[in-house]
Image (cartoon, rainbow, N blue to C red; front, side, top):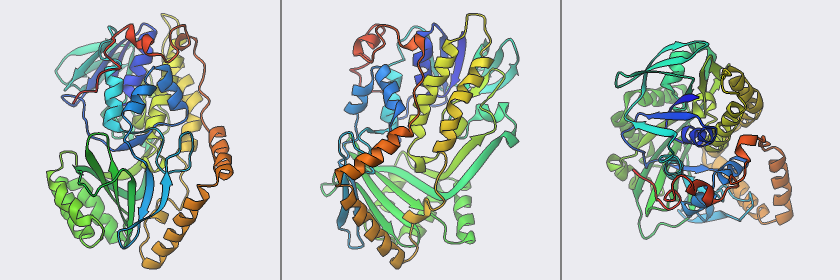
Length: 436
């Protein structure tokens, strides 16, 4: 089987790793000229951890841990309170035990696949046009003018997938706006910084956070929710205009936010990874059409509010590869694509369910609302120390996790999550730090 994957982030390389075990030949297009080292924190949870273990990469995930000790809130005087320290094997913190930067996660997956003889990466290349998609093949013209036929085209090119836009009618893709904007960038680390996720709740629905990373810098974030329809329009307009307009808006809106707002505003102009993100979900009527299938955020972006984007991408890639692995040599992949969606879609839809009070509760407009919220997180911080209570919560959480299917092709001898399995292809994979 010849497979073209558009996107070398998380879902695409994970899928390639498993498909290569079935003998498939995979080409991966990536629009960037090299892997991007940018990106904020992501969590790897539940079944996704089991998938990473099957790949022999769990130790690499641990090695690239962000070093975050836990989450703590910052009061109006700039002092920390209500700590939620990370506890091994526990869900008693907003910080995951397996916290990693998205760029590092991508580098781990790239290093584990780049030397496989069945996997070919083509950077600075995109799908220019899908020329045909029929019972026999999918024909694609790449951005460099080359035309090739494949058995399968996988759109793993993110929330605003260009492949999806070409192949699926607009009415089949629903964009759900969650009323929040998040802005991320990296700043120099100062001696006064610490290894906690520091969360400051400013008034007028503004939040400022600082987080450590394993590279000697600090990851900054502003989040904002509009307090009026006029303000909502202003923020949406800035999202459409670009970086200069976005930074001008932030300087206006966050100048009096307090705590370390001035430091962050002064640093964002020089930041190479400034990113203005309108928080939205993607919900599709169907994930595939013919021999084209969407994967990861292209199919079902859950939004950062769920903390599950990366985990869904990893697990979905495993399920898609598993269903494809059941095919005989001359079988059409269409039945496998339908089985993939039938197996995984119920869990995705459950994950995308966000309570009506989220994210509003974390963005108080007035001082009295912030005071109540501060009291609430203080109480939660104390409850998180009660082990039996946390264990009860963890049990309910595990019961709601996706049960990882068994696929014979991926449970053979040697595929037990050991580094030796990867070593058959490239002994350097587990020792490389990553590129870009």
